[in-house]
Image (cartoon, rainbow over all chains, first blue to last red; front, side, top):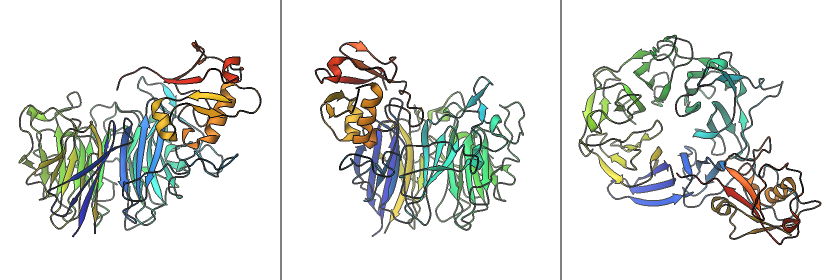
Length: 393
Length: 98
């Protein structure tokens, strides 16, 4: 029987929740890396036992963790103690995210726009998102703050930047959102290994069609009233993007405000907020088997990061947007003031698609029937930063 | 023999308990002690000082003999009581909640 493994990153550690295909009883292990912020944990599609985790701290910086047994045990790549004097190759480099400034492959370390409008140098702060390769367990992409995309091809031992993104001519116009200037979304096109989509707060979405050498903004159609030029090429606060693997040209976006859709791989976008009670929010995801079924969790506003009316509602559209229905069965419908952060929703791929999301109140909710009924599978965790799901044989 | 006391989270990361004892070649300074510490425990690279600039991370400070050494130059000799192993070099995280 199939199994499901839910990987939860929280403000104070990581948790791994496992269940059989019924998804009724859950075993919870953790906290792993107790006391550290775990921004993201994700498994390799090529080897489900290979997991990567981003462990961060305001005191101690970045740590990169790797598991080869589905999260039972963890190691820091290259973190072993040397047997004698001297250093092992790559030792201690798994948390080294050095912006590429080499004249051959990199760009001069340019500046970006800071909160106060002045130009500010790029400074590495943390890894927000880890996206393992679709085909190679040792290859993994990292979206970082300050915004840049890195890749490791040796299982997280060493990292190298795709400098063409940060060095894009619009770089000086990028600016941090309230959470920092983070590259938070990385989508690998299953039909084209040279195509990658990324999104940055607050710069917008970008796409490469040449394996990461060059990038271009894909923000046409976005309209953001909160920036001086609402239809600017960059500067939009994209919160998350999602894609169904069977239709890699169709993208869905939850922007700071507005839920958007693109049918041409990001070349143009149109709004599909429709009848949502508010089109502000962070998460967006797509049903595993129905490419036109999408999910969002509306949040009241940018100033009030909690559900409208204190009612936690997932909204589902079966028409690819515009027409939305509230899903409330099993979710708190009064006095609920949690948030659902941008990487905190995921789906499994069992026949009856499971949908999962975590809250800043420490709950992880699951639905084994595509959102019709919800139940908390963890209730009292630290604030949830990310949720990923693996469907295991 | 130099004694170093790490914050709890870094002891967990390095899989050590209690103080760390290090052999340091030449004069004991912040830099030479941290070089020896990171060579012995590579997982600590980047967690106490920046990978590239080697600047002390802002939420960490260095103390010994009840003195704050955080703002001393990295190549300044550490107190004799530290270099002789009588007192540990303390690496202390800022007192902050969270």
